Image (tube, helix red, strand yellow):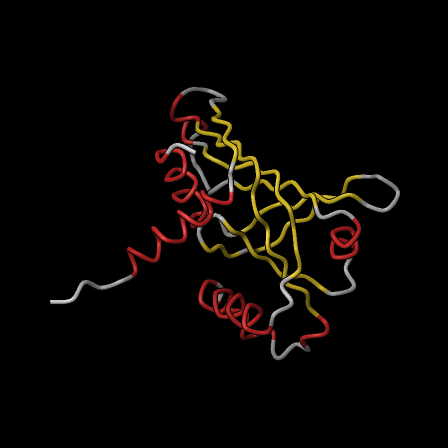
Amino acid sequence: MKHELQQKILDILPRCKDMTVATVRPDGAPQATVVSFVHDGLTLYFGCGAESQKAKNIAQEPRVSVTMTPPYDDWMQIEGLSMAATASEVIVPSGFAEVGRMMYERFPQIADVGPVSPDAVKIFRLRPEIVSILDYTKGFGHTDLVTVGASDIAETLESMRHHWVVPAD
């Protein structure tokens, strides 16, 4: 993936608080649900009820579609992302804790919900495979379509962690 497009994705992600996740129901019908999310580089995470329809749908079919758009006041400033991704449940306790930490950091109001039994919640990791970047600042309906490989995800994480390190004096 071109560096400039990767940077555009990383610019849009933190400006979006919610995304729509589309899954496939057992009868083949699509289901779209809005969820709040966090991200680590290009990898997205969201939580939902363990018995929710979307959790059941993902257990049956892990391929999902995702869309998100930051707020805008002017049509010619619309930006957004549409992704084809693969969902997997985060089951390792350390991963569950790390995503929980990111959620509390991004959405401090989650503390008002009170304690929730870990059995009542599932956390899902979404790894994008194809991303359509919508950018009206380049013209009405302008999109760039990119394929995301494992190396792109690893490279993005490494780059982000590099920026987090404070140089020694």
